[in-house]
Picture 1: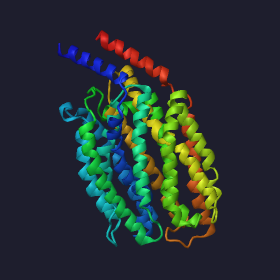
Picture 2: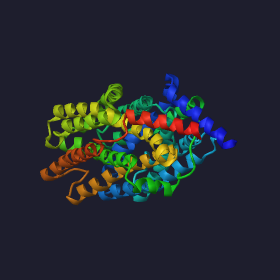
Picture 3: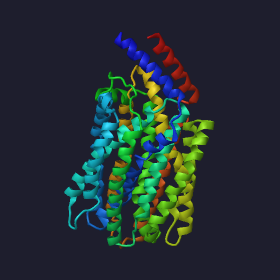
Picture 4: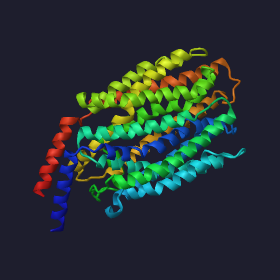
Length: 456
């Protein structure tokens, strides 16, 4: 009797999910969670590596190695948090309780990491780096799963991830307005100001989401474990294919992001343009998101993503050849790639949400927490691979973040900034070109699942 009742409840819930479009107020309350997280992430990805090397004097190899190890720790914590959030009692809100717990942890870790005292060493960066990554896992993995559970509709999922991405870009843009790379003191002030923005933002948006966004989607327990995660990764599947393409493309995005401040300082010799150029990049991304969601509705999500990735490669191809005085050309490249990156930010996560129904049909499991835990791990691993390989490579060839470099070393920086990113993006496109889950296939999966639930 109980299992039959549960099956009926899941059937009704699935139908409601597929039929109802999330209202604007709910979209805003959910999407706003990304605002403070994005502001902190832009500082963590763009400013922190350069600041600890350039201002505090840590070696490039040390900074790259420390952040790589700290990120690799998420290979453990992301699946654990995904597993535990799926197993959290629904009366507490499976995702809500984790998002609420993450806020104070993120605030403390960001304050100390973004406000280092003069003379701190490698250990300080290591421990506070791990702390902020763990706290971020508490927030990001449940938040992404939460969004995928708000609807089962193929196009509405793109709308939800688009809202989250839009607010994330607003957070990024707000953080960028605070960046001043004129000298070491202003860079320190920028880092501190972004830390305050993150803390204040969390205090506002987390209570709003906890009050406004429902959290009662069903999950299944079987297979939702580290062993289940390994089984997903071991066997060829649409999920593994998407995850690997996302990792490759994410690494392609993380390399120029990690080298950005060094590039504008030593290649273009215009450190003062860092904030405005990044603002232009993410503003272009924000403007393009509605257009890419519309394109995805017309041609399919993975096809639209592939078009955008190829377009970003075409724009970015000129970056390795620029030098001092080529600011106008660089601004054009930044604007073009920014327009393309809107699809990069909004569509892959929506595609991953569609695979929740594929998993339920193929494996009899509904494990959004686990899916987005592995998704978060891939995202963080991309940044770790970028900073953990590129910074030591620069150190190996004798490049110095403090300046005084040879022309050859500066040219190598320019090549590393652009060329690996283009190659990796083309690999990701090749992996996604014939992705099997499109709108028609997803609609068929939902129809079959509804019929199977009725039979059970």
